[in-house]
Image (cartoon, rainbow, N blue to C red; front, side, top):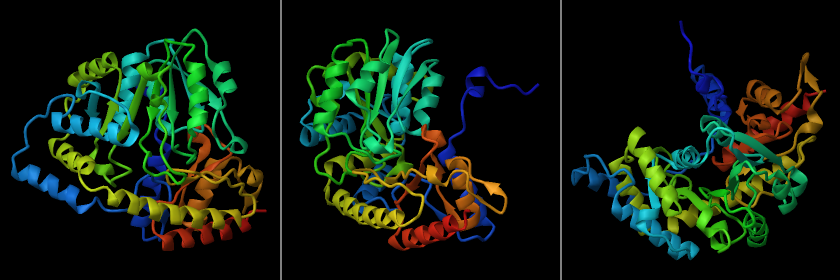
Length: 397
């Protein structure tokens, strides 16, 4: 009898990966699909980082790495946090994992148990809610719409907290919205959380360097909550290293020790070669980060202008990451050849089939009225994709 565990049965498949797979299948059939569904820089990993990986192979870094990561990488992370964020951490507070995704999941599995509530401002990345389910916790979704730039208010946060609240996940810059919390906004949230010492704050900062409004702000800078903040970051977005799978937490020592214990039982340390590449990313020249950020900014402006011209699209201006998240609810109820658009997932499927453009419906992010575009692709692809979308939307009656 084929029966998966209740734990697995409760999980939803990743809608972003599902849309990417569908677009790949169409491509394999010879269709010219433009994929705007994946949250991945389209740049190659910078050469000096690749060279460090090659040297690591030649230097025989082919043995098991320490569970929490090599000491030189953990020191490099501490140096980065001091240099860029003015935050003081010791290597013992850093746990390196197989991507920031594992870092978030490790933390949740270490602090959340049955009946514990985790506050997730939505729209939110698809995997947060599923990870909370894995930890047997309860998701408490706090909705922030496009009119508030998808950012929750202190009053909304206060209203969501109960005696069962164990954690909150804050993502800034945000996937899927591109929203960035300012220092003042983060301080206001920190002041609320300061009243509840049992709540762990998971700060997902993986998009830190893809920021169009100046300096990144971390909630870990505020002393009234610092001892409860777990920073999650990694090399994938800033250094175009998605496939290298290196993320980390910078955490209170007790959480770092817990994650070390957990990781020691189910993955051990991450790839030795990828870690040596990550050391070069953090310790080497940083100009490559700015070159990519400038390209993303150019594309962002291009996509915003083109999206504003599509009837039925309500567009805000994202301040970070590489996503646009328009409200498309004005198109719901419209149809093409008898096929009715009921929500954003329907619209995403229609655009894939009719326009050969892969996007992701907002349903999976907790915002069924929105559609996510990644603009991490060439300017030419973006212009063509937005033109196709405009033409396909015009056919809806």
